[in-house]
Length: 101
Image 1 (cartoon, rainbow, N blue to C red):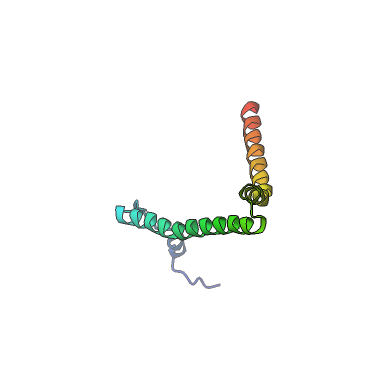
Image 2 (tube, rainbow, N blue to C red):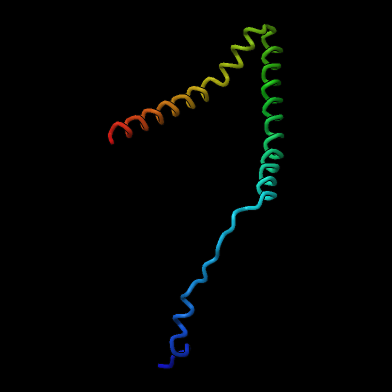
């Protein structure tokens, strides 16, 4: 059987050169924050537009400000209950784990 590698050459292939990672420079850091701001601003504007129009539709349908507010709140009630339930469950889980230590 012939060896395709000269003597001990196969060991050199296994050596991985270590690379050092340098911290990001200040410009990269600022650019990341700028992109975050650019990405979130349209989402915030869109969220506000959707909420305003949902309240407007409620006012058009009911012609009563109080009833429109109740309707608007009732639409979001299931998601609020789900969020708060999950948050309470997480808090209880962390508390129980802390007490078990």
